[in-house]
Amino acid sequence: MILQGKRVALPATPVVHKRFEAHAAATPDAVAVFCAGQQVTYAELNARANRFAHFLTARGHGRGAKVGVCLDYSTDMVVAILGTLKAGAAYVPFDPSYPAARLRLLLGQVPGLALIVASPATARLVESAAVEIVGVEQLTDHLAGLPVTDPETAVTGDDVCYAVFTSGSTGTPKVTAVRHEGWYNLLNWLALEYRLGRGSHNLVVSAFGFDLSQRSLMAPLFCGATQHLMASRNFDAAMAYRMLREHGIRTVHCASSTLYLLVDWETARGGEVLSRLDYVLFGGEPLKVERIVDWARREGNTCTLLHQYGVAECTDVATSYDLAEYRPGEHDTAPVGRPAYNTEIHLLDERMRGVGAGEYGEVCISGAGVGAGYLGGTGPDSERFTTVVIDGAPRRLYRTGDRGRVNEAGDLVVAGRMDAQVKVRGMRIDPSDVERALGRLAGVREAAVVARYTEAGEAELVAFLVPAGADLAEDDVRPRLLETLPRSMVPARFLNIPRLPLSPHGKADRAALVDRLKGL
Image 1 (cartoon, helix red, strand yellow):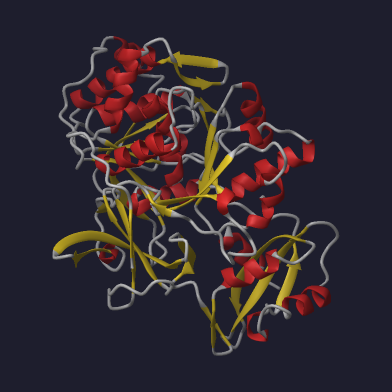
Image 2 (tube, rainbow, N blue to C red):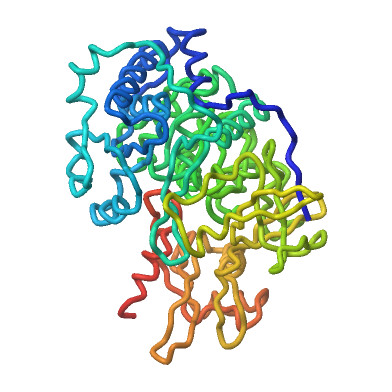
């Protein structure tokens, strides 16, 4: 089974920062970035980025180099990113919201790192790096003497533009590299398909290290709009909502869990700022549609919710679905839609053969968005990048490890991880199936299900429940769940918690939930 995205021609040199440069030439006085009360025009940002690019190339860190960026959201961050791209190098986010121990681990995973751009507030977080650490602020005088003209570095669509960290099958973080062609294709699809333009001002609400944040950072600059940045290292719902209200923002890209928080904030205060946006583009984890359905169907809500699916290895987004078409009675799981431009979705069995319509298979992605692979990668993770022959022609694709099918409407439905199933009393169970059933119960605001192992080595499921009101009693939840699930799928324990912990990326932090089970 193959879903084919629309074929759209790309320029001969599909390089993302060239679109920004074109806007800087056409609308030099338009505001490019707004942060902490300060704004920078396209012309000013372009000049600063050019100076930083000339600084890098003079140091020998041009095409093919990898430049670490450990900065809080700021104009300096955008300068460092654009300057790195203009030099022909690729940037690697080192998220300052991560614990220092995590950053130390990540620093050792990037082969051939040239240098790291930091600030006085973040330099100590990466001081263990075996490379030079430079500060944009400390370079002010030096950069002032460098040219403001666009560098002449020849960058191609095959060159790597950024690399982000993602989990590997062994638990060790991997660094997956994205090519300019894939990033350009993604941003071009968003601009054309959803008519994003100079008025599509954006607010970044996700952590810097998240793959989703890379397109959130670049999309408005690709379209000629204004990028708004929160002067906060961690997500702040109150600040985000205030900025949405005060700055004419039209688009937000975020994880599903972050959308829940924004919806909760608006609902509790009777506001309508979020519901007046043009788009919220969200995904990154299984959707708990019950968290947003009442808000989404509220009278006067004109915001288009785009439920999207993708992986970091394939430029973040592969499919998109307008949630206005979702009908809970018709779908057990909200679809993630159809492929982006120049993208194909393959559903394959364990022998890499296509499955039939409606049948489950492994979701595989081919097309322009497939990345360059893992930096320095070998072993089972790198083997997920493979080549298959389709219609007599070889196609490079990435095996996501996700399980999915195509529904009767022709939309992709992702049902969880191929390897997420837990064997409980001889039965294979996907915890996400249990979570969906819990989420449909009255009184359950959110639910997360994790597996733990007894002293005898037997797996059992534990459900964490966020109640909509008073705490939920186990002897009330269990019989209601048994009305829709077989006994083998009903968790052994139910624990009430005030809220689900979130990772810095804004996703539900399952590792933190497992930690809570220790000692119980």
